[in-house]
Image 1 (cartoon, rainbow, N blue to C red):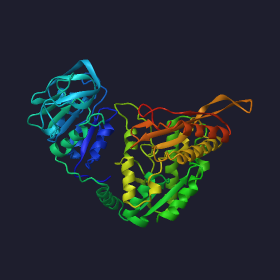
Image 2 (image 1 turned 180 degrees about the horizontal axis):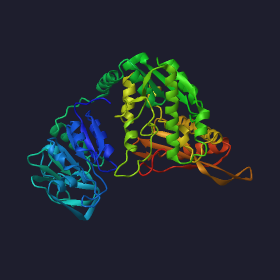
Image 3 (image 1 turned 180 degrees about the vertical axis):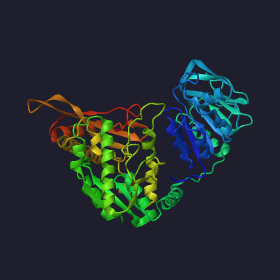
Image 4 (image 1 turned 45 degrees about the vertical axis):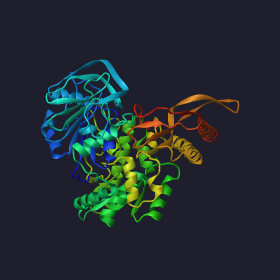
Length: 516
């Protein structure tokens, strides 16, 4: 939402590490955005990028359906860095040659640098070898006119290239990943040395710019905010409230999909800790009716999203003339909801792309450009208490997407009891702040068990705990066996209707954090 004088635009060709490029740049206090490779050239020009990065990707540039960005990118007069597939595309579009490699390079490689300027400024040359991370089956066989080699590896004679007159650079390896030990240096040299950016993108500057944008957009009109009690909506409400004060009314909708005791604790928090005007709406029966017999996860998300909007509009009508709806959409929500190369999005987020066309309220999404950890920093900058900022994420659709299959009052009761146990034991073992998320999932299957010498045929609960930084990637948490055992024993002994607990050891990608 906020405007940025400097920005690095990343064109995404489908790499699993594209988001890491944006992260690494933002860590240097320079703003970056990710857009599909197919972004219209005129739209790209209108963004006035300070620099452009072409990401990696799984395709081959010579494939018939290879993703190709507009070659006009190279006529914009701004620096361009091509990474892996992006380097090969740059080479092909500017007149070089790319072919399938006899020996593919996947994993660690030793880079020999021949040129200590540009992206390699300050690095050693000669006999020095630098560890980088390769992931490619094709390689550059002939540089495009005007390019010279600046680095090589055992299987990549053109591991890095630069144009002699223009600010174009290509690297066959991935500087954004931690395994490339000189990666941060390379990206810093690109954004500060070649693009001549200054490190001025901070949460303080973000707040100032966003408040100005909100005030200019809203004027003297009224705004309602979708408030769940989670980090995202709490920070959104605080930021919008700082901008327009009493023009904001927050609406908390109890959709019946909250954790045990969550509704009361959330409302008590906002009453005691903030100056927000909050309206409480009990819509439990409405949402259970909407979700009756619905098993498709996309349909669940959309029905929940539509339900929220319906209720927000009804409440807005009671308040008189309301023009805007503020909500806590984050950058990962936006990225995961985008269709790439004609494929379906990863999942529909209830607050992205699922809003009905008849919605009369205009959206305000002040966090749309931020990753989760940036939102936490923003919340602290706004003065929100630690207890509100460092809560584990909880999905907007709530327990509705942690129940596989139909959502019913009975199944919600089972999951709530299991969820309480998970959080109690995680906190007791002091793992709550060590992991990104920890929760229970109710599966749509039953298994045979033995309780009190009797056969049972009951539900299975899955335990999901992950480590992450921004939810774009995640690894399963290596919890102590004793903790896993305590959680499993309590759930089976205390939650009627469950006779088996399993632990999810899947990472993202290829899995997602939530099960639906």
